[in-house]
Length: 98
Image (cartoon, rainbow, N blue to C red; front, side, top):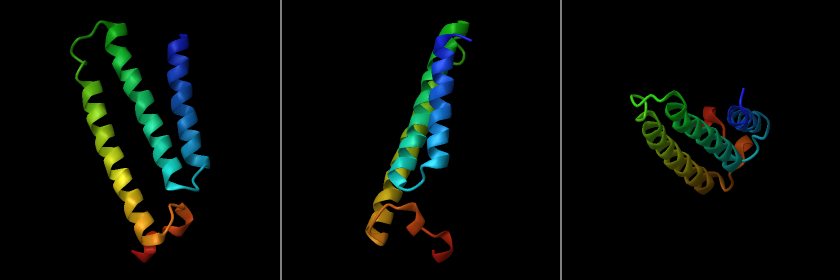
């Protein structure tokens, strides 16, 4: 395994662990999700260059579009929960009360 692959895998693993263990604020959860998407985007951008495959060059652009939609939805949820609950703590949010 090359150093580049190790850095992508470790970045994705660290952001997954951050999402699993540091769930106090919605902002930190969204930041971990964005770092996961960024590591996946970089890995998908480097993959066609390593394999000399031109047929999969559209995948990073699609991943970037979905990442932008995910970020916009996350920020909208952050603003809505902050307006209704007064903070972005995840323990204040309860799906059964909706």
